[in-house]
Length: 100
Image (cartoon, rainbow, N blue to C red; front, side, top):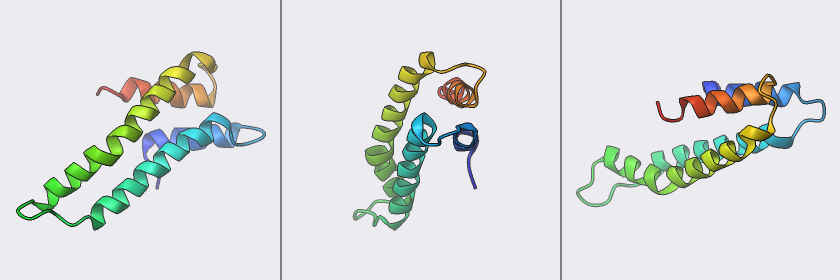
């Protein structure tokens, strides 16, 4: 199952005649985030640490840098894509939701 952000990049990838390119780059960011989530669930809490705090700490350490890189990539690519394209839609949707 895809989240709303990822689904838009999947649509953009399907719309490309030759595949790959920026939509595939975006999907790699999402794959990295999913990997962090799987790893976070296997993380053992430190002594005296709650499970929720352990997962939050792990996410802060590992997901935040990926999210920062994704945001920088989106900011870089946004002026280079056609706004009415599937990729333009995916990029603008993701950026518009970023601070919500």
